[in-house]
Image 1 (cartoon, rainbow, N blue to C red):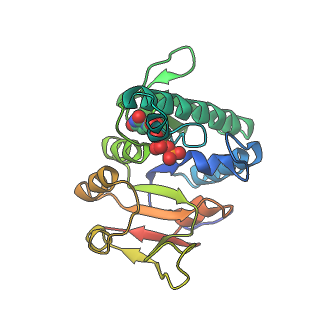
Image 2: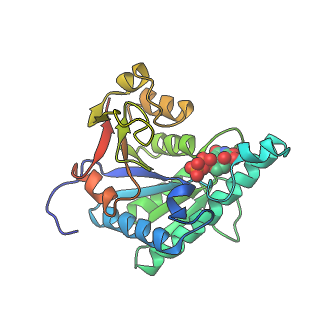
Image 3: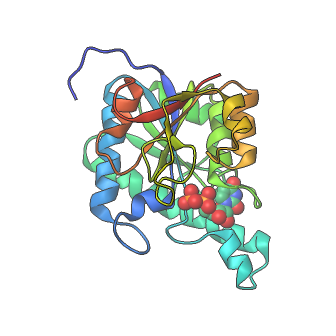
Length: 241
Ligand code: UDP
């Protein structure tokens, strides 16, 4: 994207769910979709924005599903965290293939695969313009990668959490089920709570609200959505303090 416009934010966490990397497939990783997301992240970095990506793992495994099948919840969540590492490694490869320096940092140390997460290491990579991919969520069971995204945004002094979803912003109801649902352009955190809008899980949303971190919700299905949202163009909902 060639533009002289200035991005709204200088350092962001982009939250990509496992589903966002699955594309049209019923399970796992869809290589063209991962490649498209990587191009979007590179375009964001090319705007001069420092980019940290938090990847989910739901395309492989979610702890709650495992617990439903009889796996102890904490163990099931460990499996879920491992799923996020697989996605992170795939994204690192896709970014490197298109010439974007990238590093995976995992909240659960697995040094033969990637670097262990530390705030210092993350910040050092960001200032060197590497895209960092933060794997294993918070590193603790009973949390989600949404909460991991909000937590890392707070500790890395990010200006916003950019959350990719299946629709182009926040609606008054699920637009896939309710055709009368209206889309919001802008909201405050308090308005989102008052209207009971399910943007992220409660812990994640509370962290963003309490630390005055904007949340930008955009569609994962629209190519170029990340750089457009960073420039305040395209379709996205901005939750601003
Ligand atoms: N998980 C966890 N702790 C974390 C983040 C994730 O235990 O801090 C586990 C949890 O089992 C979760 C799975 O990893 O279901 C995958 O993450 P998530 O469900 O957030 O992925 P997404 O829905 O974004 O694909």
